[in-house]
Amino acid sequence: MEWYNLTDTEQLKEISEISKTDPVLIFKHSTRCVISSMALGRLERNWQDSGIKPFYLDLIAHREVSNNVENEFGVQHQSPQAILIKNGKVVYHTSHNGIEFDEIDSMAKT
Image 1 (tube, helix red, strand yellow):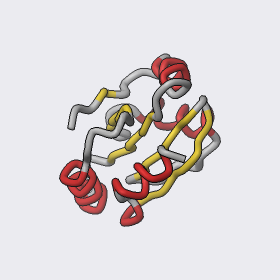
Image 2 (tube, rainbow, N blue to C red):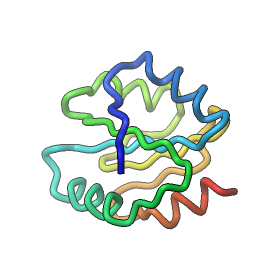
Image 3 (cartoon, rainbow, N blue to C red):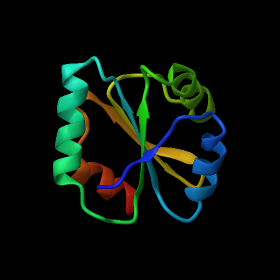
């Protein structure tokens, strides 16, 4: 699995544009949280190339970006959190133990 690092608020416009042709996943990760690490590991182990562009956000290092994700896409912050975007809009989001590749992939195909 190859992550694109989300480190700057300007990338949110890029993500909206990319999502017009390919589904985009933003994974908000807390490097201080065991549950977040478990969710990240499970997602990476089960990941299959399905056309979803995965962006990784270290919300401890980039809190401002995390706040802007909430403002830009209207999804209340949680950690860990998976946000799926298509055509510039959130079509699915979940957090904690609800983060499963199969569910994300299924929603990306609808």
